[in-house]
Length: 409
Ligand code: HEM
Image 1 (spheres, helix red, strand yellow):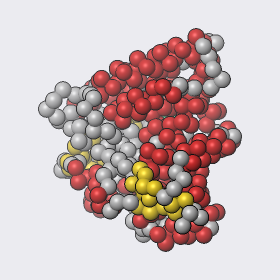
Image 2 (cartoon, protein in one colour; image 1 turned 60 degrees about the vertical axis):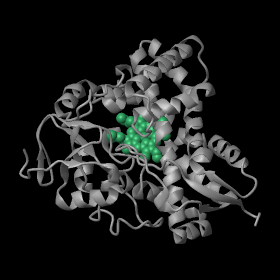
Image 3 (cartoon, protein in one colour; image 1 turned 30 degrees about the vertical axis):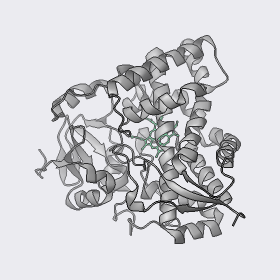
Image 4 (cartoon, helix red, strand yellow; image 1 turned 120 degrees about the vertical axis):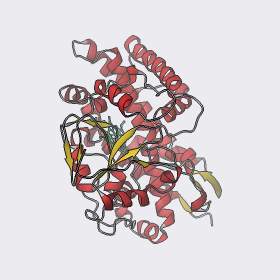
């Protein structure tokens, strides 16, 4: 035990409505606190900026997938049987330490560099324009359905050469697996369906390669490189889920916060060169990832005034770190011109988000095009909007907005 004897905090429903107040309370008390997650696992939640950054890059915190099962069993405090994730979906870089991590990440890095991603800009713009073109008259729409969901999904599916027909199923399974839906489907059921689908996808790329980069990867592995069938499935799973669940919230939460701060929206409308900085502030202020993915301590690790013993599960709250006053003065105010350097919305260290350049481009294009084409207003009272009950992802279920084509007034 650390110097501080932690009381377990329970993350209940009110946590999802307003995690920021809860985090502020934990930050004031300690750098890390033991909490019990809604799925009833006891973990250490790291909430202060300095310790969050330090622990994300600390090799004594492991992500090796083989080490998790006994720890989840040990720290499980629920009453029903623990959900077990399909093992063919977990063997990816975000669940690996070096040298596996290095090997897996290296194989796909090239496809996601800022230069390569910049080449996708015209296509991202085209998809965005097509999605927005359906609104020709003043309308009330759910911005998630209209733009925030379909844009990133279409982009990542095109990159990976995933056909259109299964995208709705994929969204459902993906929602269940990252715990952002309240669908009756179980994790096991969604995992099995997803695994069967991805196994068939790998096989189809093997039999009938396209000019997408996933086909390249499948065939590279046959040329003596070391990605086996399950690693390919896991890689596709990681990239597709990351493409489905994150950027959607960058766009939706970003627009939501602009609409809640009309003076910031007016500044952005008046000076479009502020857009890249605004996207960084969207990420800092209300990033898509609340708590980074699981890690576990392989030795005792100090986090500020607390020692986290070996063999404990650790979650770093990126959202809390990004609201830490000691790093971002006046952290709870939304200011699209503030310095945001060092925000942790994309993580830090060797697992720093591979898709960050792509997400930034998608965010800029989506928000830029929306403002170019429409006058936008919230079409619901903010208090009535619901946030997803996930500790991993932070995002709205729906974002009702009224859109009036510019020039139509
Ligand atoms: C705004 C959108 C996004 C946000 C906020 C985001 C955030 C993150 C974060 C915080 C991590 C590190 C997690 C951890 O250390 O536990 C991460 C890792 C990762 N992200 Fe993203 N992500 C976004 C979009 C994307 C996109 C579009 C892709 C590409 C398809 C992507 C692919 C990945 C991959 C492959 C990793 C694992 C990297 C590794 O383990 O080395 N992300 N992301």
